[in-house]
Structure formats: structure tokens, C-alpha cells
Image (cartoon, rainbow, N blue to C red; front, top):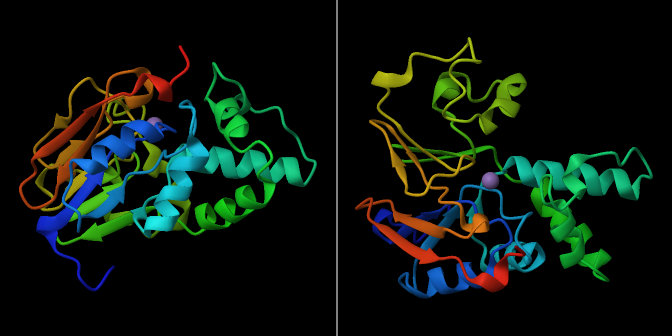
Length: 227
Ligand SMILES: [Mn+2]
């Protein structure tokens, strides 16, 4: 954590998914000294994944690893290693990795640098009472450091019918901030907040101030998405 860290100047931003122009506009609305934390899924679907990831690295912002960073890392590493490439990630209509591949055209060196950064991303961050994950992580809060459960940090909030091992988290004091499942508006529960407002689907990108829980929003810039 940066030494000048203050909750009042800290904002968490939902899934960006390659929407660089929208992100740039949203950040212009935040205070200049803002600390920014991303919930992951910086890449895929939108047209400017390379630019988004490069901006986050250059700015030294914090980010947790999303399932799309994981997919990108796995696919691209397999491509370098000449292994199986039959992943749904690489298509435009599947998981949107095609747009990511196109954004890195002719930039293999930069891509390798970004992969190293992605590899080191944490699966969760804890800041005071906030537990920041990519997917709905609260049902695994007590087991968050058990490695075999890490892949489950990409859970959807509506997966409760499938998941039999969720903790009884309703009385937990922490507030889980996450993305991963998109809603038209920020979803607020008693101790969770989902910030994915479907930017890559033409809706909006949302930032939330950690001190006041106030939202700052930016409508999707059409240049960021391919219809
Ligand atoms: Mn996502």
C-alpha cells in the first residue's frame, strides 16, 4: 500500500474490460491524488485492453486478478509454449479475447511484460473493513488463504444454488467489494457491493469512494466497443 494511503481519497473501479476511453473520462472526474483499486477484468471484450493494462501499470494502481486476466495469461502462455489453443477465450463472441489479441498487435515485448505483471496480481485485498475480490468472495472469507479455494474467488453472487460450501457470511463485519457479474446499477447488499455496471456492454463504468461509498459514473464511450 502506498504510504500516503487515505480512505477518503481511495476509489474502487468495476470491470473495465478494455474500455480505455471510458476509463480515462471516469478518472478525470476523480480527485487528482486519488488512490485507485481495480476489481480485475481489465482486459477482453472492449477494444483497448493493452492500453488499459499499460495505464494501470504505469500509474502503479492496485488491482486484484480477474478471471479474464487468468484466461488471457493461460491462453497467451500456451501460445508462446505452442500448446493447446482451443479456448473459447480467443473468440470475439465468446470471452472476448480476440479484441485483446488485436490490441497487442506487433507488441509482443509489451505483452510479455504485462503477463509478468498479471502473474503477480493478488486474488484479494483487505483495506480496513473492506474485502476486495474479483467475484463474490465473501462466502470464502475465512478460507481466503487456502490455496485450493482461490479459483472460487470468481464466483457469481447468484451461484448459491450450485455452491454447497458457502460460509454463513451474513453476520461478517467485512464488506466485500467485487465485480464479475454485471448489473445495470451497482448492487448493494448488507455486507457486499458489486461494482460491475457492464461498461463493455454499452452501459457505464463505476467508481466508488471507500470513505463515503458515493459513486462516480461514466457512460461507455462508443469507441471502446465493437457492436
Ligand atoms: Mn468481468
